[in-house]
Length: 206
Figure 1: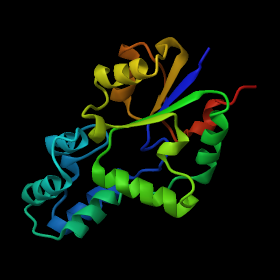
Figure 2: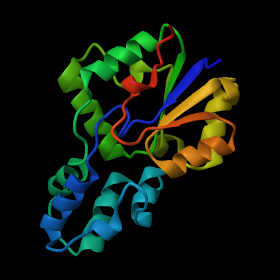
Figure 3: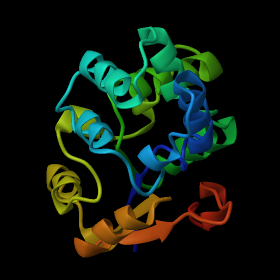
């Protein structure tokens, strides 16, 4: 019996379009940057930023060096954030209902710039009385904890912090390698693909 739910953020709670960021950076530098960043593989600069190993200022300088550009911080931030679309109110409503039945956790590979933009989108959509992190019993952001999916250690941290039974905990994610990492520590998993959303999973008890 499932007692706890762990949600990914991007592609599960907030809608994403990676191609929009690729297009934005390609316009800034004048060549196709798609080999540098996809959902499934990315340049080590992004991994280091997601792990909190470099600051936002160092990330921006790294992007300027990587792409051979001299643009302003705001230009880099806007291109980097372009992939972040919207947080559908229906998903937030479902999460609020699920809290009556499960313990809820968020586990996201993200970074300081994206975290701030997600919070801004959330506040713009839902006002200031509710926060994104506040939808969950605990929210784990990779850049804050210094670890990231699909490392076994990040899943084990969530389980140990809250004394969760992996066999009774469902991890919901849209990236295959992260699903594989979760399976490796015994978590139950749902791989969201093919346009499915959390509404299609029948999470509300009958």
